[in-house]
Amino acid sequence: MEKYLAVLKEHHFKITPRRKAVLELFLREKRYLGPYEIKQMLEKASLEVGLPSIYRILEELEGSGILVKIEHSSRRLYYSLCRNPQVSHHHFICSKCNKVEEVEFCNFSEISSFIEKKLNARVQHHSLHIEGLCSECRVENSS
Amino acid sequence: MEKYLAVLKEHHFKITPRRKAVLELFLREKRYLGPYEIKQMLEKASLEVGLPSIYRILEELEGSGILVKIEHSSRRLYYSLCRNPQVSHHHFICSKCNKVEEVEFCNFSEISSFIEKKLNARVQHHSLHIEGLCSECRVENSS
DNA sequence: GTTATAAATAGAAATCATTTCTATTTATAT
DNA sequence: ATATAAATAGAAATGATTTCTATTTATAAC
Image 1 (tube, rainbow over the protein chains, first blue to last red):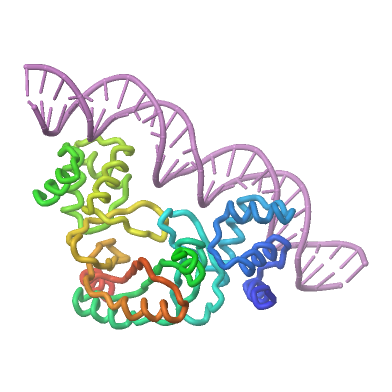
Image 2: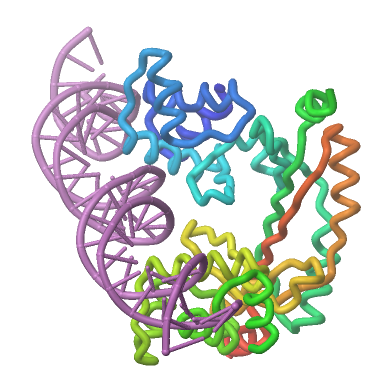
């Protein structure tokens, strides 16, 4: 937690109860979370936060590199904690429990140079979405 | 065009002027297109089509494998023509002109088995989004 | 500790992409 | 030619996200 608060300070954000509460949620949950879901979880912990505030806080945390946006097929907004912002990585998402795990391995350079040659293009960004069953859900499913 | 009309028939869709017009647009444009943009393009060609119809037609064409949904960071709906539905492939998207090109090369199995071992997970799907400048825009940009 | 300040927040309201609904029209099988 | 289910238009609803404004609060400077 301290680590993330320091990052917020670096970005000149104040340490407010709502920001801390949202951060705590993400530290506790390994899943990706959506704005409304977050509102409800905070309510259960007796903290009333308006949706606009939640949207704003999520944006700020993303802008600080603390959260990553999950490109979900539903095209709704989801975020998950980015535990290693320094290292470029991809995400493995469990389709059953929505857990997000970071994958540091990436062999993209090969495909990138293939594209640059084949299409005579310039590759700038890439993102890889990997979905499946995490170790826990995999076991549950087979039983 | 005939090829795509045949696919529609296979899926028991009627060949209507609007479906044909939408298909024609995608055959002509190499870019990804959004619903409202499509409506305007059809209007220019003197064909009035309601937005709900466009949304429905796009879904049908996607369901038939003729179009692919583009997962855009804006989280709006975009589609592009899928010229080779038989062959699994990824898409290279030009960030300047929005052109979509199919890339058949994929070295995903390596990263997939890495994940399965490292996370003890079961990988089910993956999708790779690759963005950059296509051959034409690359040249324009450097001038 | 106080206080001044800009930043953060709540809540109402607006926005706008997308979806639903229903009456009418149309492609096509016969 | 006609019967039929499918397709369409247009109005209306939905619902996630954003904007706006008045109020509150964290914190830097004293």
